[in-house]
Image (cartoon, rainbow, N blue to C red):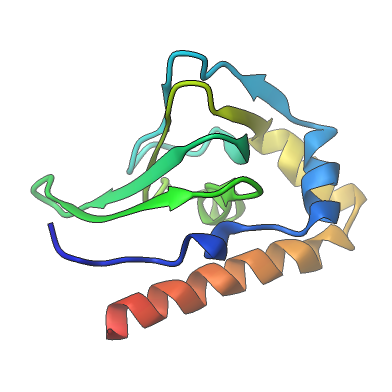
Length: 139
């Protein structure tokens, strides 16, 4: 595995956005651990990490893990996929006991239409992810 590290803080959202998303979120049972999504899957929603450990990984075209990092509480996972309606670019797996919820894709889209002010918060998270990915690539 290459030593590629992306800053896990890149996925952290402000509390106002987390609160708004939580109003539309459904708890995901991770009591025994759970694969949230796989790299290449079509997006089903945006995942919010509330507590516990979630691991993010990226594989190359032959299945070798080229990046691995933790997602901290407050992280939004799958944001680029949900916004762009493209496959997830990473895989995310919640460890046993993690508290994670999902905002279904259609609910997220509806929330952005009814509360456009939140779009700024979403853009801040996306910009941080892009900066972190760019610095990882150029390192």
